[in-house]
Image (cartoon, rainbow, N blue to C red; front, top):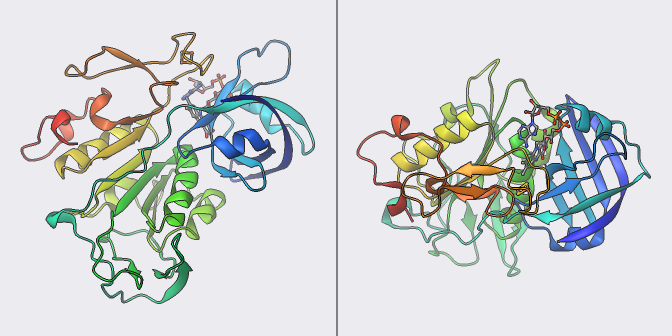
Length: 322
Ligand SMILES: Cc1cc2nc3c(=O)[nH]c(=O)nc-3n(C[C@H](O)[C@H](O)[C@H](O)COP(=O)(O)OP(=O)(O)OC[C@H]3O[C@@H](n4cnc5c(N)ncnc54)[C@H](O)[C@@H]3O)c2cc1C
Ligand code: FES
């Protein structure tokens, strides 16, 4: 964690979303997907910094990119900042997503080396092997996951991860998706927006052969796009609470481990003010957790989303899912 100055090197705006890149090498080097920074505003009445997720980090260039929407006075001030300005941030903060996934089991096998009917492109994986990614396919319909093909280790099993985001909750998921696709685990990505968001969508389109977009004004909720018989070994999600609740219930119904990235109002981001408490479920060993230091990413069974009413079938108690 660094108290850092950062220079704004680019700041663009499109369909209500602001994309701001900061040159801040120490933070860029340390950043992990799912972490956030606290952004200080101008001196004066807005003393408290604002938490914003790390949308992207490039350690080689020393850059961190944030994507945010104008919610109130603080983000309005940020939206007026121009390139070249020096700002203050603290970060990276929070725990980030756990990227060690459970091994596939008989019920969710993804046999690497299986065929794909889609056109494909080559990608060199981290071990130097060439893998085939199906060509990017942006769909707005329900579809069972398509296998990815890897020439390197025919027969090898691979974790199959679904990333599910809603609104500006998609921000931390971009860095996550980029990291997974670099690790040769191209995720299946489902994004939901109120209205089409080309600004955010274009960043995800290059990261996966399986991108599904829902817009409330046309196709409904993002959860309507999820497959009815999923074979995922993990689900990672961020977005509005009703969406998190539906996704966590879906994961529990299908017995898939799920990580949820939570938001709470934060004053310090450092565990000092106790302003960001999140209620734990009854079986948890503490009644409350701090979103800023215990999270913002939690196993879905460790936060009280109140989704029991949505779980289908005969669910296992949350704690048995691991
Ligand atoms: C860990 C974390 C990561 C975040 N990442 C992003 C991000 O990548 N992009 C982005 O646009 N926003 C993000 N947010 C939300 C962002 O911090 C708030 O929108 C921002 O602080 C609002 O400040 P403001 O002064 O503009 O608005 P305020 O005047 O403080 O509030 C305006 C409105 O926003 C709501 N609000 C304020 N803080 C939060 C919050 N923490 N969560 C939800 N609603 C809030 C208020 O209830 C109010 O309705 C994140 C929040 C957290 C906790
Ligand atoms: S924001 Fe201060 S303790 Fe979490």
